[in-house]
View 1 (cartoon, rainbow, N blue to C red):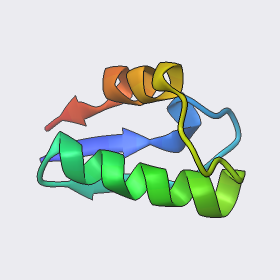
View 2 (view 1 turned 90 degrees about the vertical axis):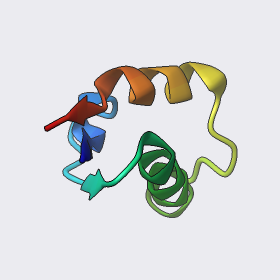
View 3 (view 1 turned 120 degrees about the vertical axis):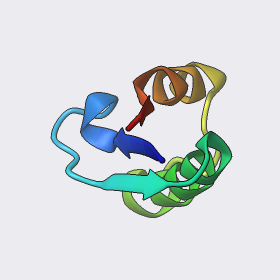
Length: 57
């Protein structure tokens, strides 16, 4: 299981996810970024930061 908290990349955001794979996390984060942060295109550096903050448990 993979876990990600948006607040690890965007201070103050309390959204978080638990998904089976990193790809599932990235898909959920892309949707969240568009809806909540008005980022309709997620820059590569943000994707890299998200990947770095994903943890397995």
